[in-house]
Amino acid sequence: MDEFQSGEETSFVVDEVSNIIKEAIESAIGGNAYQHSKVNQWTTAVVEQTLSQLTKLGKPFKYIVTCVIMQKNGAGLHTASSCFWDNTSDGNCTVRWENKTMYCIVSAFGLAI
Amino acid sequence: MEEFHPHNDEMTFNAEEAHSIVKECIEGILGKVDYNHNKVNQWTATIVEQSLTHLVKLGKTYKYIVTCAVMQKSGAGLHTASSCFWDTTTDGTCTVRWENRTMNCIVNVFAIAVVL
Image 1 (tube, one colour):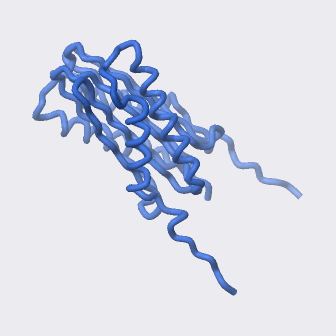
Image 2 (image 1 turned 135 degrees about the horizontal axis):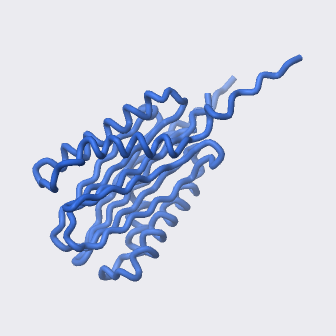
Image 3 (image 1 turned 90 degrees about the vertical axis):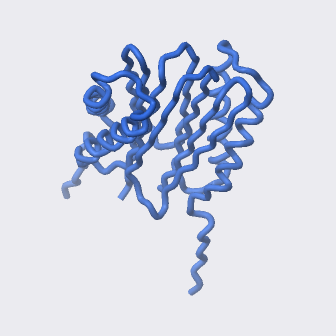
């Protein structure tokens, strides 16, 4: 009996996810300057686009995507995350992006079902 | 034949319980201090680690993700959003916002049920 093993289908591929996130950021806030009235829309657009592209990959994963946008103003921002999961199958990927007026940090976590 | 029905409490995320666990952790670590650039990394790491340890001690069959952001108060705008693709009946999230005179702290807890 042949067993079809497809290792690629069931692991969290960091590079693939990183590209998805970068595209989502570029398309949502690419050429824009920080604008208080639009930021809520932007963070929502980034997480939603990222999540829908991730689910389109069709892998048996649950996903969590978080996005932080901060105006460049000299303030310090520190973030940390800690995860209790299965090291062999779960993974995460964080993308840091900036332009002249703001920072954007997107984290995607994938947990195997 | 009797059917054994598993206790539902074990498989739903109790957001209030998580909220108070995290709040205590933040208070314990940031309660009496002002923003200090040299120490912030230590603080965020300790907050996530302690919160995670307490959550795991609850003994439920969940995977957890805890994230923490600490920002100096300086008038800058900060916006965060998160989106999750999971099982809405068993998985859940909880966010704790805390602040003092010199900084803002936001901790997110995501809990994913493990199906054995």
